[in-house]
Image (cartoon, rainbow, N blue to C red; front, side):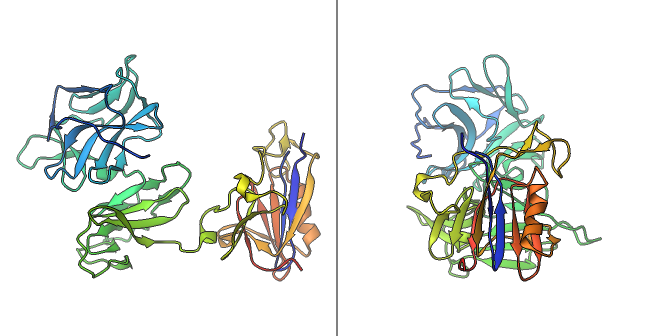
Length: 385
């Protein structure tokens, strides 16, 4: 059995770590352009990837059953020319890919299986479901104003499309479920809510009052009269990217982070990222090409499942130590720190805390950063001398 390991470093920082040993193919008949009360649909066994149930008026977007990981089914809105999913209903609560799975509209869109288990519902009492030519799926009432009771634009998954608002009540979650983007806004009396929107003119705008943005993040296509459909997506690596559809391909139009080492954990657990060079492993022995720098690590280092801070459980003693010089934590400005007089004192704080996986010590400032989670990618900021 492999022993747990501790890791650390020297100037400019000292690190001390502790650890134990969808391609799509659409098949469908002509879909409806509205769903009324009494609508029912089951999976067509001949469909391999996407079964269209509802189209927008232009034919650019379609709502239906999307196959996920071969065994599950999601309700999705698809960009038809590219077969690219733009929205999923409850991606963490998927129904089985089975002809026993059923979608009904009884005033609410509801998907359930043969046992009656409900996987997702809009929870509405509406009259019809429509898909707008913006890709927005809506449940509406039949009245003079066609009141919107529910819309997919209020519940984005990993993608925003042009003219879709993103507010402080929403979140984007990457398709692997590991990264999340949320907006936080302070309430200014009389100022109105703050939101961002992907503008068709090629920028991400922040708005509060009126139609003019108070701040702009420009895409490459900004002010170039680009007519392609724009999307803004949180990718699996944690980067935010914008794309436009040129009629045959999605063209990269914007990326928030251009340096790989600035991405969240670009080299994985116990990896080391060198700007301009890529990834390696902290131990200098494991090949990053293997996919993992460590085979596994424990949820905590406290025997008996005790808590942190050295209390609630005994510290495990079956660990080894690994130190690296010239490395630091990414975004350490977001972490709390203590000031210690030496590297050994900083390491001691971690050793006496069974919820500590490692520590980073800066010889210049004396700042000691204790890491209370399995170590992710670290950054090279100097040599090891």
